[in-house]
Image 1 (cartoon, helix red, strand yellow):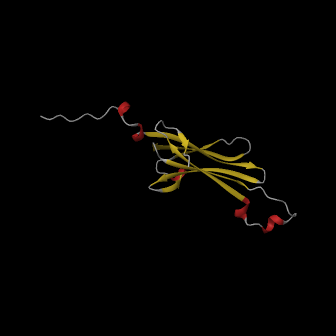
Image 2 (tube, rainbow, N blue to C red):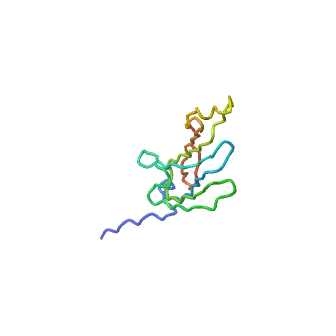
Image 3 (cartoon, rainbow, N blue to C red):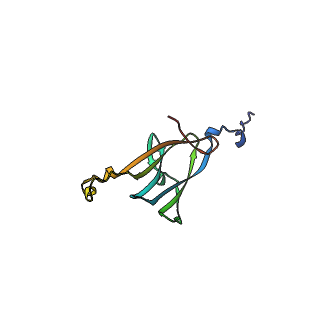
Length: 131
């Protein structure tokens, strides 16, 4: 009678197939000229989705530190090689022209975004992807 092959022992599984528990922190804090926001996007099926909307995400509000409006930790179970994008939004430095010039500026021009792509490593860490 043929025997069934045994499932590989977890320690011999490829690290790229393992699912890792990752905690991402999103926040909003008070800075000169406004607020700075930090949020995470997770690539699922070729599209980036806000981390707190990923199926199975556990969202925990944290006690904000001084200067923070809010802070939350998002716990996700992600396989290695999953792409993440960190989006940081900060107030744009403005040249002062006159006292009321801010009234005529487009609100979008008052902030700037910095985006960096990250990846879950086989060891379960988050590393920046060099372009």
